[in-house]
Amino acid sequence: MYDLLDGVKVVEVASWLFGPSCGVALADWGADVVKVEPTTNGGDPYRGFFHAGPVNPTIELANRGKRSVAIDLSTPLGHEALLRLVADADVFVTSLLPGPRGRLRVDLENIRAANPSIVYVRASGYGPRGSDAETPGYDAAAAWARGGFAAFLTPPDATAPIPPPGGIGDCVGGLSMAGAVAAALFKRERTGKPSLVDMSLLASAVWMNATVLMTHANPGPDGVAIHRRDRFDTRNPLVNSYRTSDGRWIALVVLQPDPHWPSFCNHIGRPDLVEDPRFVDFHGRMTNARELVELLDAEFGSRTLDEWRERLAGFTGVWDAHQSPEEVLDDPQVLANGYITPGDASGPPLRAVASPAQFDGGTLGPVRRAPEHGQHTEEILLACGYSWDDILAMKEAGAVL
Image (cartoon, helix red, strand yellow):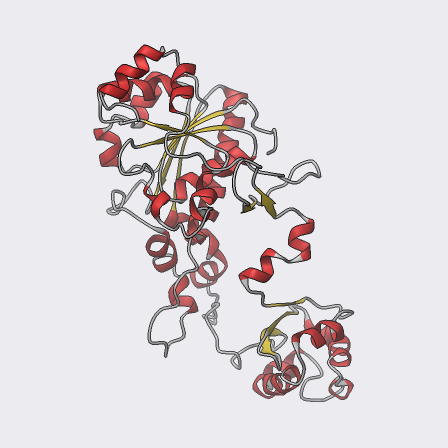
């Protein structure tokens, strides 16, 4: 854990991954993040989403480093507890839609009445305006489908759209949300004015897909825009993936190929191609793209990935191997930089994905595990000024777990 947000208190009324992933990044950066969960049905429904072993990977991803308090916000005592909780908080994050926010009286006006200086953050599927402002959204719908990824990546002859790997819009949007919170805190520090921050899964998708969308929005006089191509329909065959003899794939990303062409030909064992008039410059390789891709398919298909690692070791252009999730987890570069970090020693072995920003030359280090449902309820209520008798009365009334 870093100390950049040491002393910052965040109250989170959010579930699943999108809103909570913002809280994870803020906790990684040193904030005290208090997760408010319902008292019934096991709390955050994400807790029951995927749990196949001693570690619940999804709940650790969404809630590590936080404290959990279980409050029934629909009860008068529960609502009062929330207002006490936010009274000295710096940030309030919610993924509740406008209707539930109003019914539970946790809208901007209600929270600002208890704390006028709080930064208020709304995480939604489709944004705060428009006809879908109150429509629920998950990553696979609001980001992957509506944001254009599935249509762009799915071949036209496919029998079904390419499915998302899960959580892409959530995690990128959550990290962007955390950055927005940091900016809002900086503004408040400078001006004394708190901000209202909005972030949606749709906005996250539009931003991630910005290169494609910008070219379609601004196509130029010839109407050219980035579109999904097959492997042979390419302007630059050195930006492509090629299969090795052992069924692996190598990604070439040589965006400026002319300076690298002689080196490339020598490294693949085909110096004869350097002066081949079909491929001698960018125009020739573009004109004869299909022929060159077929040639390179044969060359890369003649050796294993390990053999290509050796042959391309000194190549000056950019390339890399397509890796499986298991390989990423054990990638020496990933491990050397602390991008996979252990959990603390309080439970079974945990390997967690660190939020990507690093500060002052250090790594995140061991992370505090996600709390159990309502694990810190008494601790948090006592810090809000409740007595043990008060807490017992609240439990008997069903206001807290």
